[in-house]
Image 1 (cartoon, helix red, strand yellow):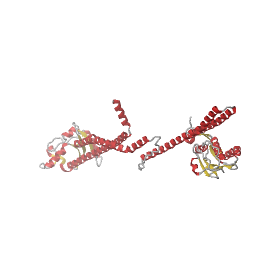
Image 2 (spheres, helix red, strand yellow):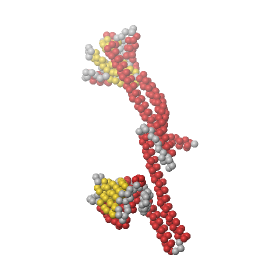
Image 3 (cartoon, helix red, strand yellow):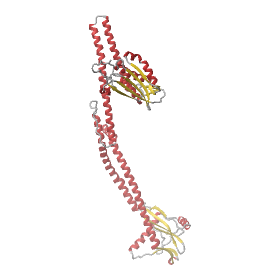
Image 4 (cartoon, one colour):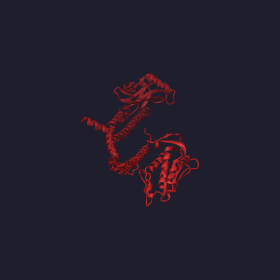
Length: 519
């Protein structure tokens, strides 16, 4: 049971929906944490600015309203801190007490001056707890301030023995009459600021962000499920595809998005599979039909000879006929094997840069004897140079197949012409005859395997071939990066035109249509 649960969890973790949800959650978490950190830093800066404003207001109140540092007769005319305020006014009394709460007033030697009323040093208990500056530090600051027109203020954060933070402002107040500086430090507690930041941190990082993350994860899970719904439909449709219903197509959502692109790609793949299955089915049908005919003939001839032949000549005739059918069967098998190797990429073209004009003239000269046997006049029209990169063996097979067809379908006294000429971007090779032509309804199928155009009317049917010659022609043209076109008029003749690209290749093996050669 534990293994099953573990397997389910592992399967869930590998699912696309889970990964999308995790991605949404992580992105949302990063955004939330980043926003919270930035806002906390801004809040801390604002709170510190507020503390500085409060200290500036206290400094202005000390310097301009309540404090006078002057010689005091009761203290033998020593400088003392005199506080001027209305003791009967509760607000002023409270304000002065707040000013004295965190306070140090020292002379230029760094010693606290006395209070004019209490004769006690002008340093508060809290300031003492924070750690007051040493006399040497105060003297050093005063000496530096004398050299500057506007001495800098000193800002510092200190903590009490209980850990309470305070923000301290230090500077000089001058006795304008005698030009004597006095060092003053005042402070304000940052405990409230710290509490505000602590509450914000707890609320944001412990309450708000986890809750928002859980909610975002649930929402992401729902959104990912809705987003993947069309993908699941595609997967379900793909499961319904089989060899018996390859015509199934998935309708697009008309959104023009990546999912529509996936659906279109799947439909194109199904179309290719359907075409391949149809081709395989047709091929199996054609092969079974073509092989059954010679096998049946061989069996029949041998059975007749076995049961009826009585003389040596009769046995010899039966064996001769069976041998002819066996040879035909062997030709079919060899042709099918060669065509299968070619279309599967196992047949490698050995391309060389050849002058097709010279090659055409040479092939026409070689085919003169078969042409004379067929009673047709064979000529070549290949003036000038027509260079292209071709496999000589395959190109000769292409021309020979076209010439063989021309000889079969051209009556005695007819003409067959092979031409080669150079165009701007290709070499054009044509094989033209004055034969009976090909009816228009047969033209789309003449390059199919085993397809044969039968005789029509009262004209005698030509010698039947294997129906594979033009399939080889189409493959050879395509393997060279070219095309083959046919133009035929019944009763007048047919012209096959092969267009091959002009290439400049060194000798060497080139793989068919970019497919690797079979090892």
